[in-house]
Image 1: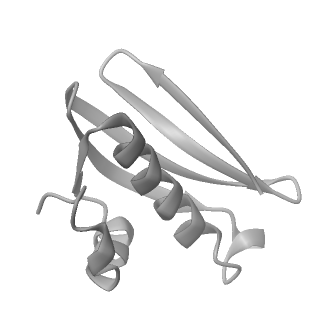
Image 2: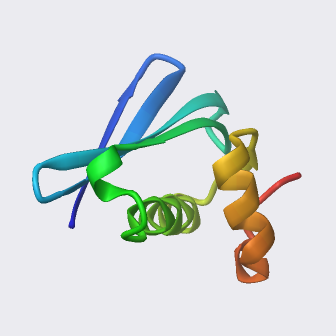
Length: 93
């Protein structure tokens, strides 16, 4: 699985690519230390393969490395955050 990141202006997206299909997680940056994850979309070909979970974990690691927090507005990301109490250091409900 390959991960990529694009940011422009006050928002951006993280992408996971596997076997030519993509999963995308978009966000808005409210400050240098805070983003709001607002949407996750996983291609039908990737459903059930753990790609969305891997993408969420990748974003959490990016937050830890970058020293910022995440507000999980997206229902998928919020559910993942609730399942992973070890992410609480970067999740802001």
